[in-house]
Amino acid sequence: MRPAKILLILVCGAFSAAGIAGTRQEFTLTVRPAEGWAGGAMTQARSLGFFRGRNLGCEISNRDGTVNCVAADYDPAVNGGDAMQCATSVAAFPSFAKNVRAINNASAVLLYFDPATGICTDLVLIQGSQFLSDQLHGLPAPAKSNIVIGSGYARGFLSGVRYNDTNPNEFISCDVHATGLVHCVARDNAGSVAECFTTESANPSFAEAARAIDAISYVGFVFGSTGVCSKLFLRKDASSLP
Amino acid sequence: MRFSKLLLTLALAGFSVSSVAGVKQYVVTTISWTEGWAYSAMGEARFNDRSSLFCQFFDEVTIGCVATSAAGYSVSCRANAVAMPGFARNVRAMNSASFVALYWDPAHQGTCTDMHLIQGSQFLPDPDFYVPYAKYGTIYISPGVAAGVLSAVRYNNANPNEFISCEIQANGYMACMARDNAGTVAACHATEAENPSFADAVRSINELSRVIFHFDPASGVCSSIDVYQSSHHLL
Image 1 (cartoon, helix red, strand yellow):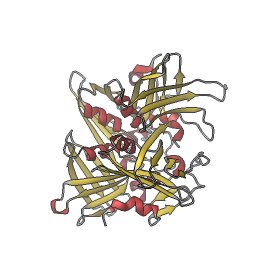
Image 2 (cartoon, each protein chain N blue to C red):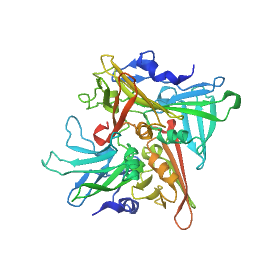
Image 3 (cartoon, each protein chain N blue to C red):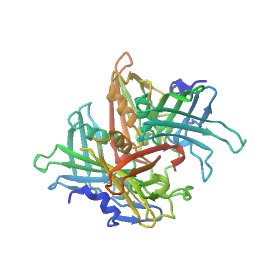
Image 4 (cartoon, each protein chain N blue to C red):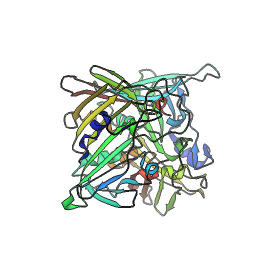
């Protein structure tokens, strides 16, 4: 399955996990070299200890503007797995480079590439509460908060929602495709869903805001009857950190 | 005291804290109304003194920032994202590894004049659990180059003196700095006008990042700043 619709699947509940806190979406690193894609949530794609068999990462060289991404889902339990790498450049694919720079601990990353050439063809970046780590690093939970959905709008604190034990069904996220699609979605505890779409070419500042979403973010979006985003609100707040 | 030399001060150990892990720079949210500045560390504020600092986009043009001290005193200023694009980019880049210094004109309070953003290992919040990356978390410095992984350096119990960070001001001035456990310091500087891609790299630094910067040791000018965002770098 090409996971381009993974966010919609989440909305439908098929892959969502109502955890001990807000929604956590299980998105284990998966690599399909023959099919030309790899993806996973950054906080779930790390290797533990000194074992380096699992990895999802991208690097931009400012010397020559090349962008290189790698993914490996080696599983020591079965002594097997796959690996891939692809390349592009800042000049050839500037929005791909912007997505790479925006990767953080609230990110799920879907890499697409041409298996024949090894050239990266898309990077879908999903910045959402559902991908924040399970661990609070021993720190106190942030102030609990809820997703608010009204007529034509939705809003919420990423960490406040993710680490709130009383709202197991809630999340908020925005995804940005390197090919230009921008999509935001939120679900409250009653299961109500709000979402909107736009494009980077139509609203470049929306794309920049979506890329900037991370664990310290408060996000809100406004939309009309057509489902087109008319406003994307972003706040970076120290008090919202886990 | 304007905090333009904060990073340099840290390198000289005046404010650095060698903790149980890598260097943590202890930051208490501080406001000076008369001098027109406020600063805080995003990852530390709510744990150190229950203070806060936030910035938000009211719309595509207007940005508002508010800093609140532990005593409950607040200050706010606004900036125009069109007139100050570097300020807007810095706001979007704020994360849990950020130190933020806000400036405003004391004579015209309410108008932001600069934001000084430092993205560094020393500002990541304290951990309280076993961290499995000690072996990898060291700063590498040799003539003309320095490198390190933010989280691995910050949470490595074996290297209490190490850090790596880069800073950028809204006016485009940039500097990167690293210190290894022996106290060796490497640093370089650049400007966004001359190297916009360097500024993009600096703003992208977060707890997933490995940072490597090259420079001319004679002039101290950065020749490259590269950032690798990887799940393997996460705690």
